[in-house]
Image (cartoon, rainbow, N blue to C red; front, side, top):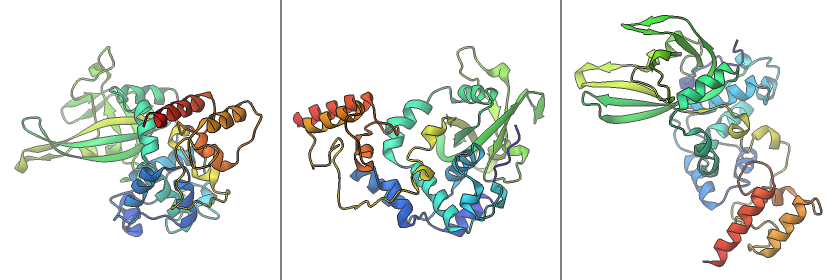
Length: 328
């Protein structure tokens, strides 16, 4: 697969330029529209913080560009591809911040993200995804390990995997028989050192991996004077674009959201009368049966499981919410 939807600038360049995570009001309103108090607090805690990188935002928007969810011209007027996007453009800055901050929204992480992608055999899932011709956002845990095998610290990173090749590669004294092609925002020139080299002979029948089954050369370092080495672990893979694009920005950008941060709607308050009651259940049932219609406010509150649709599963969750409220 040829990856053409990549940026000309690096993660470090973007981070140095932007300084701190920020969103203009219109974008912040879209992101906050459906969140409860705790989730809005999480967003606002990140906003204004000094940036320590935009790797997740870059990886995610690269996938969205690659699959046509976003067009380059939307991020920079006149741009025909991602490489022509100007990181100084206000729309692009807001877009990158939006998707970087979206990673921190608890409703997505707790209710969907971990249920689907935090699996023990993430690497096996990644290989299967790439063999099927799909791309995948990949998150790394880069661990600092001492000579006793104890983890002394760790850092996170995110990249986009876009292809897989099988042939023999020799790195140091080890032989690998496959390579996963990686777009890493720390290397816009697609250096080979940032690809994942793997050895299928170290893949166990149950899907687990033996030590040394794969390597990312760029992040494998040996700090001999401190007795510490780095070790890269593929911690999650996310190929589901619908999940990644939860509360997708470009599906909502044309809507006028008038979210008052002081006004908090209760979870399950579908009719927005300030309480959760049987009337909310009836209203949701009538919507599902196409008897009543929802305004966008009702829809977003009724979407109890955050999957951007309203159906019988949300109805079941609403009934549970009502029972929980009665037991308080």
